[in-house]
Each structure stands twice: as C-alpha cells, then as structure tokens.
Image (cartoon, rainbow, N blue to C red):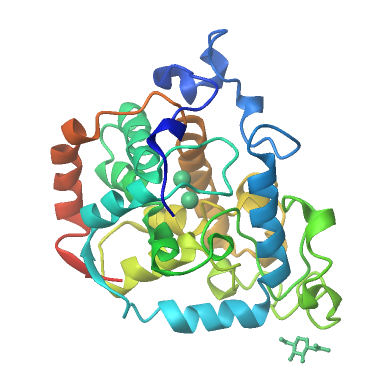
Length: 292
Ligand SMILES: *[C@@H]1O[C@H](CO)[C@@H](O)[C@H](O)[C@H]1NC(C)=O
Ligand SMILES: [Fe+2]
Ligand SMILES: [Fe+2]
C-alpha cells in the first residue's frame, strides 16, 4: 500500500475552478467526456482488474458477511481528521481519473462544493468525508471490496454496470435462478434501504455515521451511501427497487456527483491551510473520536 511521491502527478492538468463546469472548459481543461473512460487510458489495466475481482467475488452471501464484520464498528476509534490523513496512503485502484492519494480528492471535492454551495456546510462536510470509508483498505480489505462503483446484489446485474459483459461469468449469483430476475430477493419499489449493495466504502461510512449518531441531514446520508451507485444515479437502472423517498433524494445524489467527479485534477490543494475550516465542520457534525 506504499505510494511513491513521483507518481502523484497525472497526465492532464485542468484548472480546478473550471473542472466541474464542463460547459465552461477552456481548451486546456479536461472535458466532461474524458472522465470515467473504461475503454482505455493509462490506468485501464489496474481499473479492469479491480472490477474483475469485485464482480467475481461479491455475491449476496459475501455482502451479508461484510455487513456482519464491519457494521458493528468494533475495528477502531479515530477522529475524522485522522482517517482523512490515513488516506494519504491510499490510491484508489478503481479510479481511471486519479493517480494521487485520496486525501487530496477529499479536499478537492469539499472545496468545489464550498464554491457553489457556500451556505450548506453539511454538504461541504459530506464532500470532505464521503470517501473515508476507504480506510477499510488499510485495515486489510482488498480494494475490490472497498472502492469502485456499487450495484445491488440479490437480483439481476443490470447492463449499466461497468464491464458488465466480461466480468460476471465466474460469479455464482449470475447463474442462480432465484437471484437472477429483475427483482430477485426484493419486492418491487421496496426502497433502497432494504436493498443490499455490493460491499464498499459508501455503505461502510453510512453505517459509521449512523452508529455514531452524527447529525448529518438525510440528503447528506444519501450522498454518502449511494455516491458510487452510478447504475442508478447516472444510468437510471434499478428504478423498480426505488420508493418515493429514494426518488426525492436522487437529485441530491446527482448534485453531489458533479463535484465528486469533475473536481478531480492534478492541481493539488494546500491541505494544511484548509484544515482549520474543515475541522470546524467536523466539530459540528461528527465531533471527537468515532467508533469505526
Ligand atoms: C441461490 O441463492 C439463494 C439465496 O442466496 C440460496 O439460498 C440458494 O441456495 C442459491 N441456489 C443455488 C442453486 O446456489
Ligand atoms: Fe467514493
Ligand atoms: Fe470520491
């Protein structure tokens, strides 16, 4: 899990103030269509291999076991800022757009939100912390059980999942006739709260926030829990499992996604200078030592 300082830099260097306004992009900027390229690019091999393992091993049974292992929050006691600092040691192997530590992405996302939503401190806080559940990777979970897009298990894997055609052949659930229907083990419109998602950092952090009774608004909790659910928020799959509450929350998850994705840039923020402001948000919404 070591990283080499000389690998921090990535190929394109868009102006971060334009990065999440694709319509305003200058010719130097990275275009909206250049993000989330799963067909090629410098990092293709690493990204593909992460998803291949995820799609082979994440079964309904696997997810149930991970809930039992992690949702009790018995692993550690740490402050939120300590977990962000830990992510200095983590490069997300599923991400085709970022080849620098996740801690910078935390501040880039938060600052993007702060610029467009200066009055919503809880939203900025969510930008800062949304990925800190990736700490599981530093505590022994393989990246394919931590990072990457998420999707429901226990029902048919839908077509918008990345590498859908080439990576599920060895997943036993793919051949299980009980699970391999549109609704599988779920009732139509049961609500996403009742759906088991592939295991990763979204669900883990949601569980940690609930366990520690952090007073983050419901919109923020949805962003935390479903920000990697691209088949839903970007491709409108799995609508048959949603209830009215999910549909009301969807615009917030989509608003969050703009910043999560389009603030990714090699222009790394001055983290030390930003820390006091964000510490004040942590003190308001998830103060002190949390159980993980
Ligand atoms: C299909 O999945 C269900 C639910 O996990 C399980 O109970 C059942 O044993 C599986 N069937 C086969 C043939 O593996
Ligand atoms: Fe994430
Ligand atoms: Fe992220």
